[in-house]
Length: 255
Ligand SMILES: [Zn+2]
Image (spheres, rainbow, N blue to C red):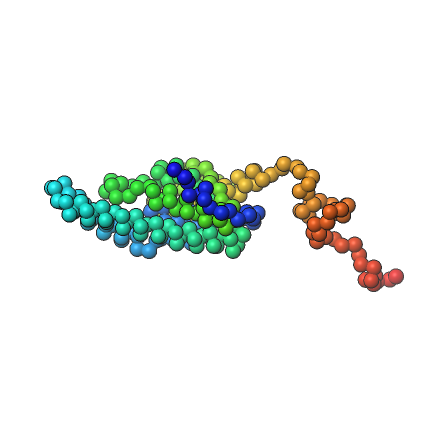
């Protein structure tokens, strides 16, 4: 089985100026570190209605109704399509935002989702984690196609850690309820999913700096402004000079 990502035509990747952290969840399918919520149009209501109808149909199917079995299959196919559509729309928009603002996209590794998204018993039957997984895949291949850097970060405690750089206090008690974050040490508070997305963004910044740090390679130097402009490169990829020598024409006071 081939992965969809293998067939993607990749655009050359730009160097991100920053990252958009994306937190995946149930109520808000995706929340970004910019504070944008992507709920998925009517997905909650849609799911609830489907779940109810499905329970009815399942009972009929168990009682031997063939048409119920057929309708059940059709229903779940429709539900799958609906969720896929929403995932396409959401990922498309996030990737467009990232590209426009020259930022990369950061997600938490999927293993984090199952721990964090605690489903109630009745939800467990109706919800699987595939939509989260799918959103991640869509984001990744759309990002690759658009030349947007994409990373996955360590999911541990993204929802419990205080994002304030000098604080970083990490405690379960920072989450008084599912929707709220409030740091027990410094008092910083906000919507839990935005906080999680912010942590994801910060982890990406750290991870990226780490990955793309040294590897001193003289052939690539000279692009940044850190290099003293001692020798003009012979093979001039004419970068603009930061400090042009004083122009001869310029009058100096008191000559
Ligand atoms: Zn704090």
